[in-house]
Image (cartoon, rainbow, N blue to C red; front, side):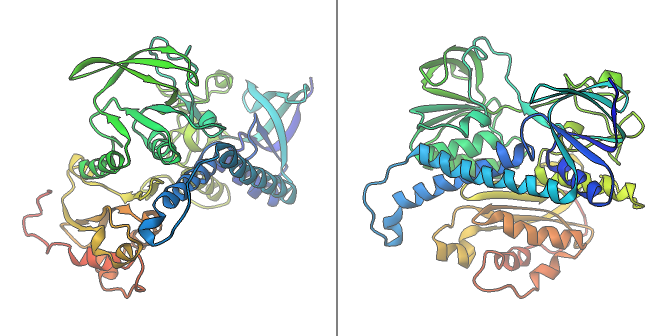
Amino acid sequence: MSATQYEILIIGSGAGGKVMAWMMASAGKRTTVVERRLIGGACPNIACLPSKNIIHSAEVAHLARHAAEYGVRTGPISVDMTGVRARKRQMVDGLVNMHLDKYKASGAELLMGEARFIAPKTVEVHTNDGAVRVLTGEQVFINIGTHAEIPDVPGLRAAKPLTHIEALELDHLPEHLIVLGGGFVGIEFAQAMRRFGSRVTMIVRGPQLTRSEDPDVAQALLDLFHDEGIDVLLDTDLLEVAGVSGDRMRLRVENSQGESVLEGSHLLIATGRVPNTQTLGLDKTGVELDGQGYIKVNDRLETTAPGIWALGECAGSPQFTHVSENDCQIVYANLTGGNRTTKGRIVPFCLFTDPELARVGLNEVEARKQGIAYRLAKVPMQSVLRARALGETRGFMKALISTDNDEILGFTSFGPHAGEVMAVVQTAMLGKLPYTALRDAIMTHPTMAEGLTGLFAAVPARSRTGVAR
């Protein structure tokens, strides 16, 4: 079978892949993208945006139940999960159409099908309409993402647990949702489903929620969940599962108090991600994988095979859409005369609980691990006047400042609109501004960002010893 030749061949239409396609095609390059199933990748279809859509529906339900606290009278509140799903699907349909418009406008070809390498820079594609095509690219970009990991626990696979994909398609309210995992996905879904009205229990193998965050952050999240009626079992192992998710389930667990049995109606797995590299035929390309199956890349995102790059999660980049897009920008810049790398990137994140948790730069755990001396400033959210006006004073802001100079090393916020406030600090860090620039700035009153002036006014004076906390 003769191969169709392209200048640009992209496998996967996630954040990095689709942006690369649109830029390359707009620049006049003959470009094709092979996408297995989701036009635009996971973010607009089954991950970031759909989950935030449903989280917002849960926030509305929560506010409605607490309307009296704001002086608003309402009648009985009920949740229609078919309506919640319909709202989410409507948004997804609009996003898919937006992506198709961008493919058309750029001139990039989108081919729906399963790609597998049969030679370096050459793939065989079994298209979704039953055809078989062979494609080659002068330059090849891999952006195939990851999928949910299913731990090797007796009975777990047979129980047909939910992943985030199925959880976003629920048309009914789980009576008792058991969440396995204490990371971002598990935390966001646990709160949303509890606010819709489900009983929720979380099983967390480690000693805290959000294992990579500071203990005070993890404790604040745990306190929030306790207040909202979510049961969290820390330092707990899942030993065995019986039954089927969506019907009745029995989970045998073990912790310091011994073995016990949990009964629930649904089980959501949120224990981690696995790269989608195993069936791609990379052994035909010279592209090497690491021990976990991620594609090996250098700091320019070049693989071990010439003319092939990897973008996003499959390359071991931090698992955020905005990082995948930045991967694309780095590679594109280098291909068009620039010189950029992934070294020293300031990567922000936001956990979309209510209130939000956002961080950029180092936290205390990371600073201590790296032996970096810092000064700590921390203020409660109740000291921020906008938070008082909203009646949402749970949480705090904190910042790490260098002991050697006035550099901002990191910022964490757990409170209303934390992601938006974090962007202010990130901008200052990108501009290498001293913390005093934010301390002395005139911030609009009353805004959440105004709290930054109080936070940075609380930075301790520089010590002569320079010893890390």
